[in-house]
Image (cartoon, rainbow, N blue to C red; front, top):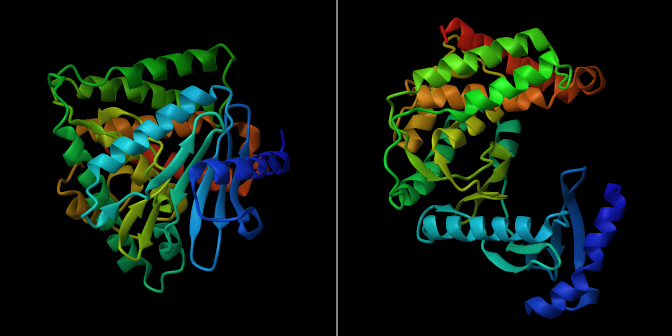
Length: 336
């Protein structure tokens, strides 16, 4: 199904949503504006802004996946959990989930007006100052989630280190050698797979702080609202090492924005980037072998999704792949 048909399918569900959700609005006064549409074998998603009058707006998410019930319930449950962990009295917030339907594959959220952190950095007259502020704010938001949810984790501290990234790397390397997986610069990719094994061994003996994870914390998913700093599109990943969230945030920043600094630090980012994040997060994780391993694993995952032909066809893939290679080389130069 192409995206146009998917959008039309999403719009056809709106009358049912109006009837069942209790929103005070008529069909004639509803204006549905698509802002994102993805139609791929594993993902079907439409996100729309719904305007019902001059003031009221909502975010309407439609996901008619093949495993719709399981996916929907998991997504709603994750959002409800994170709503509970992020205090309503805090400056750090998530949009309220107003209504959802497993049958329709629909979630209806409050609309948060304001610029995303990414757009602020894109248009900043003083990018360095704004970048530092954004990283402090993102660090503060993640800290609020991780600290409040980590208190609920009663599992025994794991001193055996991270094992699963090495297993994934071993499988990917075998797929490359068997001709089942094709990635750009495959020999360099195999070097990253070998690095993963060394990094995982380096995590042995280190306690892992586990907490509820955001799942997709990048600066396009944070909004400066009028009453606080919001994170949107929170898929949730359950409980895991907190460094997973940090690695995703920081690698995504490097993929999108260059690092202009003479003092290059972990993952090709500047020392100032890491210091700003640590100020908001309350901890400097740069010396954590868990974080380094999670950064390398995030790069492994993202690299696996880039085919050689993608780089030739799309400039955005070329930009991301250049950043991926920069991060990998910085880890090598640091002795990992």
